[in-house]
Length: 199
Image (cartoon, one colour):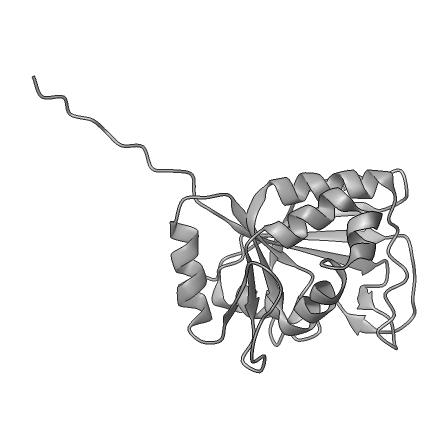
């Protein structure tokens, strides 16, 4: 007896970005200062929960270099062993035309055909992928239409100067607020859906 089986499509694999920002919209200070994010136990619990949602981390060159200098170290493993294990163990992709090699464990370098490569990965089964930090990469991928969600953690800090979160954007990008979460520290996590351009 033949049975006609209808195969259900697997849920679409998404790419979301996660960035921290100050109340006045900066992701780093005038001298690349990054001593201002409010990190506590609740933040760390959230960070681990978010890492459990993904099976691939995407970085631009600058953020990759900073992360690769910290997470493989003994100090990082001692300070936050669970997150360090995730960061070191998860597959990572660094998108850069100028970086020559990526030595951090489980990392591969993508130089060309970025949109095609990431679209191919989105069609594969698996968990979501996260762009960690990497403001320039996030803006670039937004322009390619392959970012499904923006997560911005607004910290209760005003810097008065620095690098604005989406400073490399060259055109207006519409977004829709999907949800927000307040933290005891005063941090607020905003989830935005980028609006697709009309064809």
